[in-house]
Length: 231
Image (cartoon, rainbow, N blue to C red; front, side, top):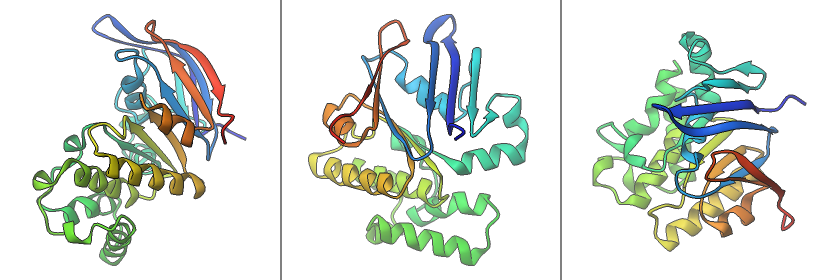
C-alpha cells in the first residue's frame, strides 16, 4: 500500500534557524498519528509542510506518491486537488476565517472547487447539521467565541470532504466542554476512516486517538515512535 504521507530526510530552517532535521516517516491511509514534543521543536512547521505551506529544503515530501514541492504546487490543477484532499486546521482559527458570515465561509471551498450551486448548498447544509452550528449560520466569524470559531474552521474543511485532516494543537484555547466535543468528533472521523495527523501537548488526546505517537525533541528530529497500546 502506498503511504498517504511520506517524508524522507526532510529538513527545514527559518533564516538559518533549524526547525526540522532529517525527518523520515510514513503515514498510511486511515492511520492516526500524533506528534508530541516541546515548544519550538518543529511540530507546527511540520504540520504546515504536510499541507504544502512550506517546503523541504532538503529531502522529499510525497502525498499519495506525488512529490509536494513549490514547483509541483505551481500547477493549479494539481494544487487544487491536493488541497481538496488534505484539510489543515490551524491552531488559531482566525487565520482561516475571512468571509462576512459563517455560511459564506463554509461554502467558499466548494465554490472554489467549481461545484454546482446545488452541491455547494447541500455540502454547506450537511456540515452545518453535522457540527450543530445552525444558529451560527448568519453570524460574522469575528463575533464568535473561540470554540465556535474552531467548529466553523472545521466545517470549512469538512465541506471539501478531504481524505486527511491535519490539526495543529486542536485543543489549545478551548474550554473543557468544547475540548470534549472535539475529541468525540475526531473519534468519529477516525471511525469513518479519515487519516488524522495531529500535533498536541495533550497526553490524554494523544492516547485516546493515536495509532502511533511520534516524539520530536529539541534538536528538531524524531527520537521516538510508539504504537499506542491503549487502542
